[in-house]
Image (cartoon, rainbow, N blue to C red; front, top):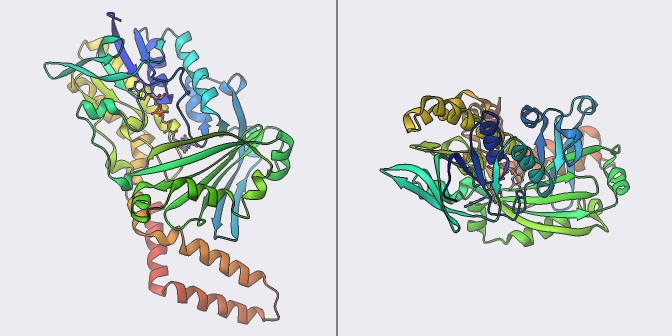
Length: 426
Ligand SMILES: Cc1cc2nc3c(=O)[nH]c(=O)nc-3n(C[C@H](O)[C@H](O)[C@H](O)COP(=O)(O)OP(=O)(O)OC[C@H]3O[C@@H](n4cnc5c(N)ncnc54)[C@H](O)[C@@H]3O)c2cc1C
């Protein structure tokens, strides 16, 4: 491992592979270090990858990629302990122009990595980068248990905990309210059963977000794969810390909810995993460049939690970092003066534009938990009153609905919530 590379990329997830692939295509000599036995071996997500960003790297990738289903319906569940109100958007346009695909990372990541290998990237698995090597304050390589590897630019793509960028002084541990813990099960069911239960065609899939079932800032997620369902929850670390609740117990409560249990009934547990999500948004994006070093994807905290997007930000940031290295190589200058262009590229792209646009949203929801509890509860109660045929006139029902509403949240509170939500999102 004495060879010097144009770039060493630490981490074989979507961010690292997108960066490595782009540099190799431009003729650079690139090494990827991946601590898992293969890319994807240690990775988990919800989830979906997006056509738009993936196809920039691999046109019509869905014809050869191990995808599960293309998403035709997005569901939003407002829940209480015993009920749910479901809003969903299904559109045949998603059958004509694909938007997102459910995938298993253990299958998708190796396929994505092979693309980079075919472009000339060397990937060494089962190798952990233990830290950066600095000379005169400039990053010049990484340490591994198998020896040192030198490079003009080190790209930290080592995910949410990014030991590398912390050790290089580019990032601290974020506060608890900027992180969420996700717990997920993959549950196997016959393909036909999934299609019957979710009213789907043979290749079609559903992506669902579920709130209100817990007692805090908890979200549930559900994705249909070919013959499995990915079911899980995400909980703010601050919320877990303050409430003392146990994630696995919360997950069991969620899975046994009377509206969820029938969807996974008789399913066989295939996989159980947990992972952190950097949900803090724009204000917690790390420093992304230094002399001889760039940071991409989750390592830089680039996740758009509002829109459930992460892999696309990872791929885009990887590509933009790679383009910056290619320019630096042409100039022969790998100092932060040249590498800071990467931050500018991020600012000019949807990655930081979206995160900047919604920068106050994570804090707003963290301080306004009524959106996770009170409003789902109210929506369900009002729907119940409206549907119950009990001799009450419709006029009396409307009065009861209004009085229930204002009993639970003052007029001022309701108006203020609606106003702030509009200001934040519109
Ligand atoms: C529960 C959950 C649901 C999600 N759902 C979605 C979704 O539906 N759609 C979406 O787009 N995004 C989703 N995300 C976010 C998405 O998974 C991430 O944003 C994305 O995976 C980030 O890619 P990355 O390459 O930066 O990091 P990762 O995918 O985490 O990859 C990092 C890689 O680095 C390796 N590594 C770490 N440390 C070292 C080291 N020291 N040396 C060598 N290798 C190392 C790891 O093994 C790993 O392979 C979800 C995340 C979670 C947790």
